[in-house]
Image (cartoon, rainbow, N blue to C red; front, side, top):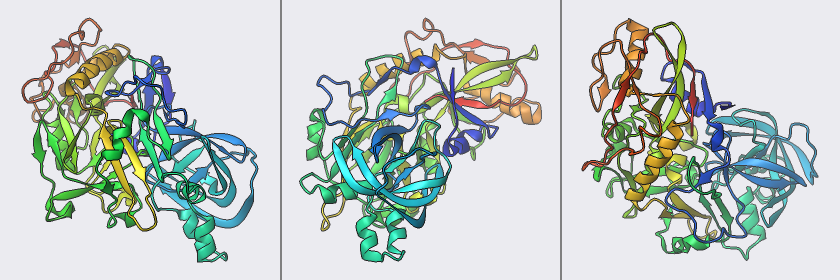
Length: 508
């Protein structure tokens, strides 16, 4: 088992299970295998693909850059604009430095530092004298990351700091341009777009890297040129975060209606959706999350106010998001994720167990960087699209274009069956959600829970069912009934009893 340090955002989500300590983990066999579900390639990757790889915890995405002659691995972030680098004593060829300080805030941390300048290489492109934040203090980075490459539209704290310095506004705006804006101002021959497709860790399938292209489109997805141009919402966060007006969310083919108070356009009933590669999960209003997971047989949460849904690991449902009349389905693998915990057995020992939790999480108030948005569609959504971000010209509004990479639900369900069974075969036995609820309840009251909020009833004795996870037991996988939700498989009886769930390990 390979362990990784947790990110605060995910920690806040999963810690509500019981404890605040969260550890990311994935079975070591995941390491060499990544693939794009619903988008397996029959043509070579573009030669100019800069590439994206999942982070060590499998939940954030990185790319390689060269700054001042030093090769670095940085996280790609569509919700901030600046290049933030943690050199940790390493030397590079700095063109210029300043005494001006800036502070960058991102989804799971923040960085303070001094503004400096160096040549930046992104794939085949070089940006002369790129402004970056040479950090003196930073939180929230993975151990394997050297910084963050922000590619949002217009949220530069560096440009703002330089404009307010002795340089003045004009020089500050010219010298402090974020990487994408600086590149397209220096290379006016390029189309002002960059395209992204996120990959996924897998136990099955061929290796297919993620896509990060600048000024071009993948030949496999040229039809993105004909996709509807979804302009940024200028009313939320100053129009800097990549976003679009969303028509609606469908669950099992039925539309979910958002509260009128969070609509972008009251007349059209649209809501403001932000796109964030720096958010491993997606954040939705609590009623929307409940609408999704209450349709999964056996899924439950302890009380109506809880944020976490426990889900049978081989069960799923049918969820899609609609933009400009086009439906984008969510792959079943992106609706839940396994976590490992320990539960006390009747003989007094602690035994590992696996539970699955929701990846579309509830948030009644969005984080500050997403103020004004109705929902944030993070990696759990973005793995299902090929998306092109276009900064447009100075006279036109920036926009995004998307095409689905999960158009065939039958194929997606088959992939879910194979991948989830392969994943569970590497993990401890999977607990039924009712067993998790009982462990929680007995820890606080000494009695099993009698009335959880759930898609089905919980057990009420001291024996906790453990889901069968062997490859043979799960070879048939889950089936999809007429309402689009998977039927849970049979369960084995275990002898779990007792106290708190111990620190969780999240598998992405």
